[in-house]
Length: 317
Image (cartoon, rainbow, N blue to C red):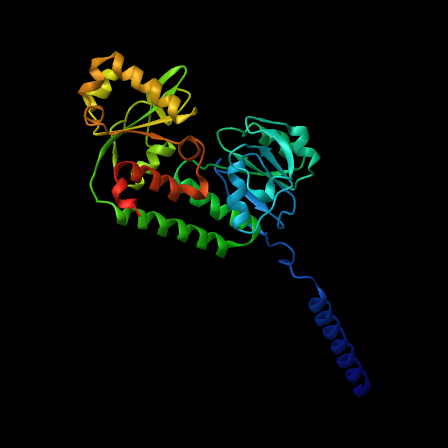
């Protein structure tokens, strides 16, 4: 009987030991499940990256510089005459920004494509159907750009570099504001094209820049154009009624040509001369590379350019 009891205890000990051994060797349920990054993009999607992307294609040249600043690289990018950093010049072209060639994108064998909201969202379904993840980013306003930097830093795993870049931009903008009087100006922003004029609202790049300087856009609250939420229809009668003290002009063409065209327009209708900005010679022309194409991480330069128009003496060396 005693031998039987001892045998039972020995058998029980072996079973317990076997059970403990199997539990210790079982893989952890969380092993390998942690995502590299979870991103909330400009289309309201939650995009989960299981690992750091190694082959990135961008559909806007404006993404190239901030991506590089946070430690990223690309295997494909669109053509651009004005926003092509040196590191990306020899990368594969995927076509013009408004005409991205999907076949060229696929030939780059990307594991992530960064898409520009407002231009290339139509590519998302095609790319996703081909097993390629996408992240859609917006970059019109300064807040958009700061969010873009944060997302790109998530993609590269260099969040600290992203935070530093944002802090540097904030500091530069504050330094510019500290140089000028803290006056509140009433401004209007007119966009001129061969088809006519329109008014830029607060959501436009120039509108956002004026707001960063603490100036009031007299067009705020106007009903936007159906196909452009950042612009409103132009009316000289409305402009006269709003009577801005400062007028900014944007154009996709050369500044000299835009100025010649606007001066002709103003000369042909005496009503323009009743607007304070025109009457007092406070009409300023803004460069397209900072105010129509996204300035990206050069937003401080856009702020300085606009401030310098109004207060050139504050920036004289």
